[in-house]
Image (cartoon, rainbow, N blue to C red; front, side, top):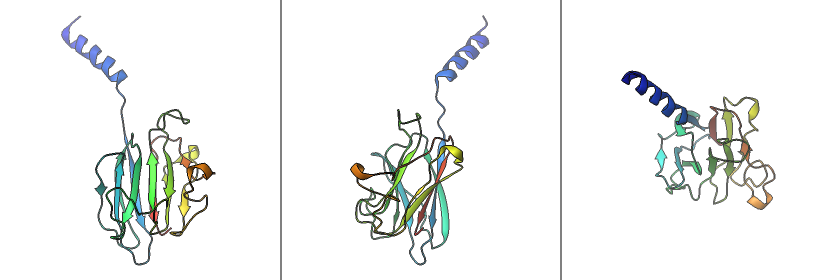
Length: 174
């Protein structure tokens, strides 16, 4: 066997065992009448990322990796500006739910677990039939199954999507 053939065969074998990971768009929309927000997000113990300050009625997008684990996104309005989103209305999501219907099914919720400052919703973009509906907390005091409830009484506050290449829209003041 010639050297180029051996190298080509080795590459094919290596490529067959390599997982190709993609990215998912996370789109932030500020529907508030007067508030400005700086979108911020992080995963697990990683550092916080941020986008530009969003004026009312504007949208901005970024991307998160396929294996976004323990992801959080929130709008920094200078009242909730902690590095992990504490004290903010949170969008929480993970793309690594092994054993929950699919190896990389996103499982997400809108959370007002700690001192919510604004209403928030999220929905799936490019979702198709494999996705449950998004979730909404229309006001900062939302306490129904449309958004966050304690885990022992969740009753539908989580939303899962079994469609590849799905993206997310996080809306402030839905």
